[in-house]
Image (cartoon, rainbow, N blue to C red; front, side, top):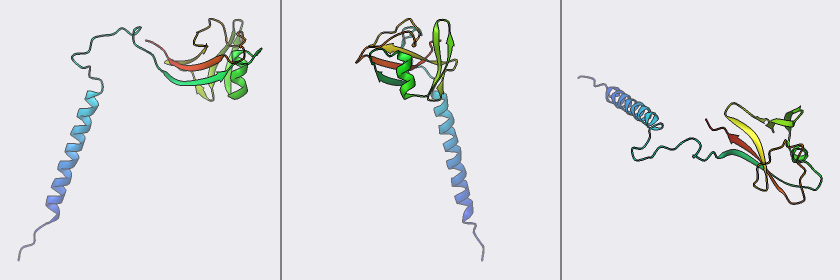
Length: 133
């Protein structure tokens, strides 16, 4: 009577499935950076830069944009002669590719957040913005 090894076919099938899985994974990784042939090139300036994170606050008479932020969030910042520079909000910090900026009523003021006074009902949004490279 001869013995047959029933585990040999199972091991072969397992190896084949593993090879197929690795092949599909490697192929799909290569496709992530691929550019479709029919896509037209866009300059970095014309491409939208979505926010990774946005914090919305409501303005209060005689409160600066910076004061509003500090009332509700933990803020890491430093002061300069031009005003404060926000480094992090709630431990989410700036990096070479993202930084905190603010807008008031969908406008981007050109002054530091501690220099701009809000009015009742102003819509203040802090945006964690991706830099354009």
